[in-house]
Length: 376
Length: 197
Image 1: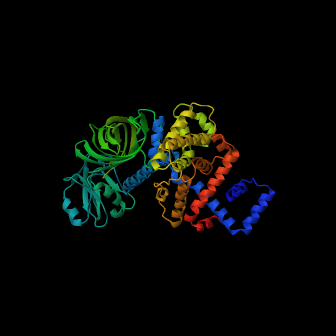
Image 2: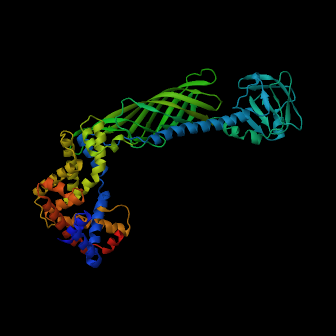
Image 3: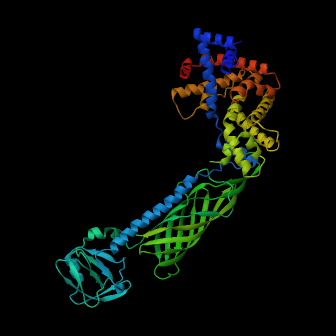
């Protein structure tokens, strides 16, 4: 019996009492025997652990599965990731709404008020920092102000030297807030009046709003969630979804009245079914649902307004991702609870055009879009 | 987590006979459990990486065709390596490979991972040297050895597979292993064995 046989028998517990005793004695006395045993253990251990170097490549995996007409991707979708993206969308929207809502409410809760006729238009506010500038805009005659919502009542303004005030400029139809100390004295029915503390520090009270309002709202930024339904029921799911799957960010710029151009970035999946040939020239069906990052440009047109707060729109979108080209058509509506902040909802039809082995294929899906937009 | 991943091999074999997408699920799990060992066996049974990949792919295809139609198949590992062995044998007969020919394609770099530690290199070299040593053995002895130490089949299963006696398998395995150790010993740094302590 050679040494290896003895090692095997010892490790498999196939030795009788005498053989085992002899084995232990040899192990204690014979250095060479101990070395041989160590080598044997090392080799078998190494062989057992070495399978990690023989992981078949993805290409081999695909070849085998395609040859058998099976789906190569794994079926488990990490629910946690999916929930994370939803939670992220909800949380981010809530935070954005809270912050913007806070800014607007702080504006409205300042120590002045206005009546129905003196509707304030947040788009027309500016600072005048010097008394001279302000005085130059005053006339000594009674003042008739305007807002974007129509004429306001006659208001007489006078310099108090102590109090801060604001006024309408009838030439520029803009609301002027003075950082110097003026007081509005209503002639007839007051458009607005101070209440409580009359001293207002505009730097503290209006900074947030000024950032938003002073740029003439050229641009718009949107943050949307776009849950989707594929036109065919998918039989495969991605092994892992993008962290921001179905989330979209867009930047918009008005080019004509009611017409805007925009750029959009979105993380999404499309369900793909297409035919091809494997390395053995066998015809195979391929099912995939890849994670994609799509870039696109779009045109949005508001044909009319419904009241002062609702703006329906149609949108056409063209873009690309690593798989092919995308087109999207959407109808939706923007709701403006505040002048520069809107909530958007829409229904969208998406197509992905892609090629495989010189053959063209398409994949379609429907999306529900909802999110928050800010003009700045 | 996929509910099928907790199924044992016999349950998964039953699912292979179901319709899509269940059979794809089942096959993926079987693949994940056995593909590494099978690829290792294929690589050690062949003289080139391409041959190993062909053998590996053909084995899986044959296994699926048999397992999805034959309800008598109960043991995945045994049947998988049985198919691989017979395909390997056919390949051997075709090529009339001489037992003593060392494979010039075997290179320790093939088994390298991204880690470049000295210990890792020694580890990889040992695997490569084992491959070379196995190629020096008589074909059936090499197969016994691989099926036992790589595939994890016991001597009884190997004896059933080759339709030979248990003692014959045991003797060939032990002698083959002795020869492999003798061949590796000059190239192998004994210091490595200290890690086992």
